Image (tube, rainbow, N blue to C red; front, side, top):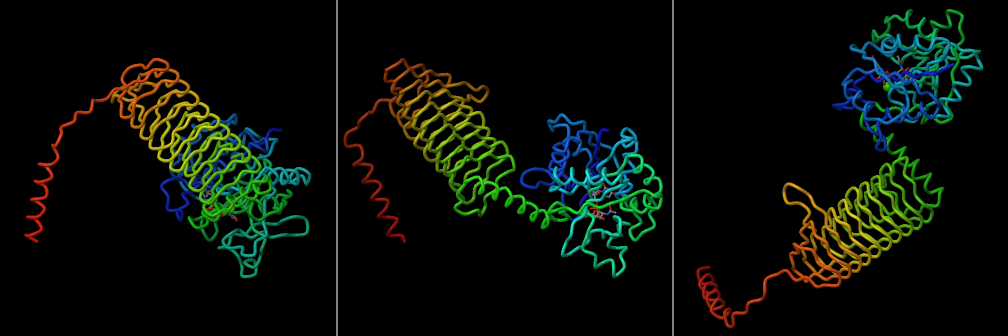
Length: 472
Ligand code: UD1
Ligand code: CA
């Protein structure tokens, strides 16, 4: 029978003090909701219903942009009357899965994973349960609901605000993740009352309701309490980020990556790094980035969706949606913008920007240069301060610079322009027309010499200077 999930995301997360729903807050560059969706999808749960509330339109927008094969829908909880009330909004959805099971997830559990979802489902099915709750053992049960155990499984969950002094001592807590038999869930929702300390419809009351109807309930205690961690405010969110960050770094350490210092190092989950690569402090590697073996990623690098070949050395480089091939040396203070391809052995020095361009093998761009919308061949040499003038205020054009060309310092190359193989441009030229192979292009004013001109000027300036000094 098909499985489905309901994610409760109606809450505002007031203490987060955010203008968006809490589930859209990021942990390691990805919304908490995304972590949960991926956990469901990796457990083969591809029917997902999200209960939205506070800024629900932002959730819908997020889901629309998300590429996935899953069938994801949302229902609106227009009043925030508790977790039970939130699930009630999905009644029609639950009806579609009668005979099957529904995973209900609080929307703030980024670390819920495939193993936990599958192991709890196994317990749920093997025990013939109407409901199975995910629990965790915590030293400080804080504001979590307490699990009341009995000989066979569990007999209920008591919210902190409704606990007796004795129940407050319980260390096993409700993580906010449940497997329900769909029909049993529908039944229990119909029986929920809000006669508790918070006058809310508690989803957790379903356990007692089902047990009193003679159904079986059990609890699956997570192996790692981290699975149950959520965040109610920014401090807790930062803590989740830190946990996720360290877990990712630890995985890379095991894979043979060397970190000189992990301060300020943030590597998103899907990043791939080849063995022998060294990562210095203060490095951000964002989603989609793949780094080869034996690279050196120096301080201050930010790489997003960028492919880096083996043996590359980067230092204070920001690169977005780019490809950098083997043994390139880049930096410091270089910006590689989207759709750029830096080929094998290229050397790029300080204060260089490359945008939407190809830079061919072993080409050298040592300093203060802008290469935009250009196709640059192999073994080209750029002097200091070259600019490809790709934009006339209305349209953009491309520059083509062929292999072995030598671009003199401070050349402006006004696109569209073609510079032939091995051609030279004289320093300070503004090249507005094509340059044939092997030619030298000079496009600058001639030097005019006026002998003795400076004497008079210098005398005037000195006189003024002496006057000013006297008036002091
Ligand atoms: C809930 C559980 C508690 C558990 C804890 C785990 C209940 C009654 N209590 O408490 O036992 O230990 O989670 O974190 O369920 N939501 C809605 N609509 C609502 C209320 C909540 O969509 O009307 C959503 C929230 O957006 C959130 C989730 O449900 O994602 C949990 O709500 P929250 O208020 O955080 O529940 P807790 O009080 O923490
Ligand atoms: Ca909570």
